Image (cartoon, rainbow, N blue to C red; front, side, top):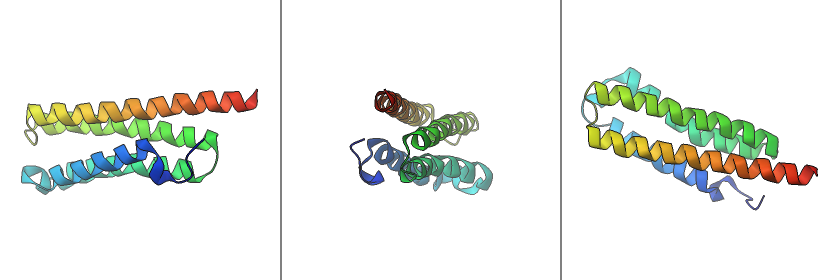
Amino acid sequence: MKYSRFEELPVWISAIEVTTKIYDITSRGSWSKDFGLRDQIRRATVSISSNIVEGFEKNSTNELIRYLRIAKGSTGEVRNQLYIARNIGYVSTNLFEDLNDMFLKLGKEIGGFIRYLDTYRKSKAA
């Protein structure tokens, strides 16, 4: 693998960007007062980048893949919470679609990295 620091990972950079966006959005309006949903979506979003880092720092391709799968799962968790936020009026349909697309894209990016690492791991084993 060509990365020496987690800060170089494109998936980590993307995860930090969406986390910043979620923190900004959830600190405004009705959402800022709904401590349960606000804190849950923030935790799930932070979990994405945290799991990427934790897997990377274990210096094991197998561990990185395992933690990336957890991070990918968290992208789905956030999307679920976005549906709730839209349905109860915390975000407009347009904002929901933008955010949902961001997390779909991040999930695909993580999935692509998993496939790359799996291919890398198999080539090293051969």
